[in-house]
Amino acid sequence: MNLLLEADRIRVTLDERMVVDGVSLHVAAGQLLALIGPNGAGKTTLLAALAGLRPHQGTVRLLGRPRDALSGRERARTLAYLPQGHLAHWPLTVRRLVELGRLPHLAPWRAPVAADRLAVTEALQRADLVDLAERPFDTLSGGERARVMLARVLAVEAPLVLADEPVAALDPYHQLRVMELLRDYADGGAALIVVLHDLSLAARFCDELLLLHEGRLLARGPAEQVLSTAHLAEAYRVTALRGAHEGQHYVLPWRRLARATEAADGA
Image (tube, rainbow, N blue to C red; front, side):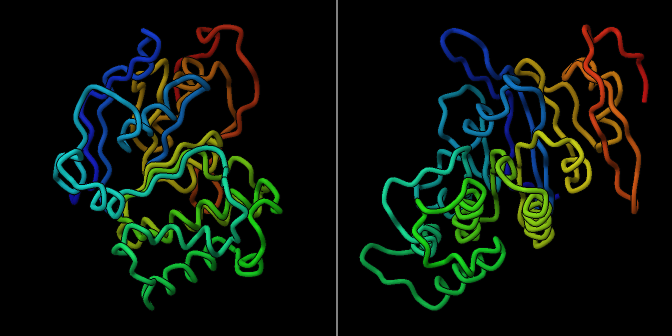
């Protein structure tokens, strides 16, 4: 197994409160891993820690090397990070924003070459942004901005991608398009860890699910195992309808539980 990221016993404390408590995980080339859990479970904090953007205890290795042993440029080429929110502080066009994803590949004062331009064009096509390429970013809708920031990440062509809620602001068509895009990117040999709230999208498109609850890893594995009745009750306090279509598993949260213990253990 070609592991692109390995994290061991990650702990993050904020305001003297343990937000992530001893989480270990790994992701290999070709894998799309969903990080799921209720609000406040520690998903965003964990993702930022893995990216080196949040102080933490524990170790992270990228491509078999300690993350902090890589230079800044090496890390930027190896790991692309998509945070929540879609902010840009200058009135740049969509194309120019996506071009910023190529900065890790450019030497100081070197103009983009054909490979850089091709990477930008492909990222715009993948994110369905060709028709918006010359539009100013600040004139776009929230969903369009989300796709622009994803395209900037894809333009990096990093072997490892960490994405925090990449489909949160999208309509159903573009949610499916983005999940298909991420699935294709993983199938091309990359490794991805994606924070998702939509359990059916996680079950349908991701190889494995990691369920966080109160900062700890409650379960990891295929959707049928992780999204059990007991796990949904404990982590989310809901029951769900479930089934399969075209060979793919889906879960539809259906009813809230006053207490997790009200759900029967099983499935």
